[in-house]
Image (cartoon, rainbow, N blue to C red):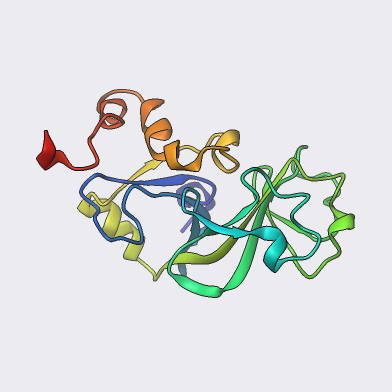
Length: 189
């Protein structure tokens, strides 16, 4: 797989027909996609657990709402932090942060939060992640389970994550924009 065919940094938006409770109405940021498979985090599944309750020092850097997000059904006992560091790729990167795509990167939660305090443009902490084996994501896309769309800067740190699915669809062109009005339960129409 060439870097041009990688979906890293893009969003997967669940189609209305995807009813798996882990992914219904989900928006997933793909953190890695190559011939080994894919890994991402669900951006719009906040939990009631505050970051301060599980990660000392990181809550001040977390975007609002400053809660853990359920990143997916895999590895729910581990935390993963995604952050944006403004600036062009190629410049010196702050200690404790690894660039994945554009300004998006992963934070080393073992590092002292003070190292990154002045560097981050935003931080979100996820419990767990979503993962796909080689070819699995491509098969799901071909089956029509997901829409693959571009990520915009505000998507990762959307202050109203429950509305993210509709907001991402609404900004698309053509038929995808109309799906933003798709009812939660179409049988009630």
